[in-house]
Image (cartoon, rainbow, N blue to C red):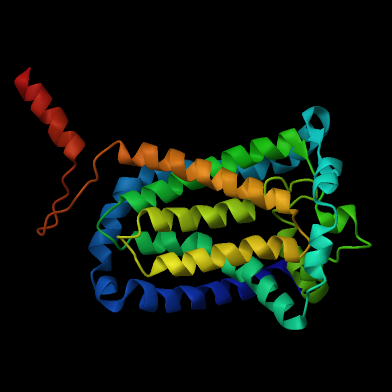
Amino acid sequence: MSLVTVLAQVGAGVLVLHLLALVTVVGRERLAAAPDRVRSNLWNVAPTLGLLLVVLAVNGVVRDLGVELSWLVGVNVTGRIHALEGQLVAELQSLATPGLTAYFAGVYVFGYAFLLTFPVLAYLLYEDPRPLRALLVAYVVNYCLGLVCYVLFISYGPRNFMPDLVESLLYTNWPQVQLLTGQVNRNTNVFPSLHTSLSVTVALVGYRYRQVCTRWVPVATGLAASIAVSTMYLGIHWATDVVGGVLLAALAVGFAALTVERRPPDWRPAGGERVDRWSEAAAEWFRKR
């Protein structure tokens, strides 16, 4: 099986999840008014979205260089994490069943991709641009600080550090997915868990702006919790990595909220004309001068 085939399978699964969520979480009435709101929100978040795309591109380019640099300036903390946790992950895997493994493997791959992409699409359909802007800013912070941590801290996951006790359940049950994860993951890049930090980021943003999309909160929270557990159950991350990911998410969302909520939200009157309150304030200042 080729990488293209795996990508097609994941893409098809995530697309189905998006369609179901659009109907059940967003609702048909809001979808009917989508074009105008999407254009307005895309205009509002264009700079932040552009920054995120640049960060993702840079992250992809320097990922391998970062691994080499970490061996020069980083600290290997694997032994310290193991001394702190012992065989916690192995004990968690002792509860493994075929059903649980199938669930956590699906959540780790399909659920994670859905959780990160759906709120971007959903928030485009709402009048308030703050949730979307905050989510994108928080993503940028996650990726930037995550890359710094991967350079400063060398850490092997439990499946690599103690393979006699911890099984790589994801690859044992779905070996083809290695073609996909091998493109973005490195064995020494486990602290903190970006799967956890980005998932918890989505849940925290959803909760902070819960009045915008109430139905999304329980879905995001449940998926984020499942993904965090899956990273340990599958033997990929330590509990310490998960805790670090939660702290990173809290920091990213806090920074994003401060950044976004310092400026008043843009709004669109019924006629469709975009009004930017910052522009109005600037025009008033110049008139007074």
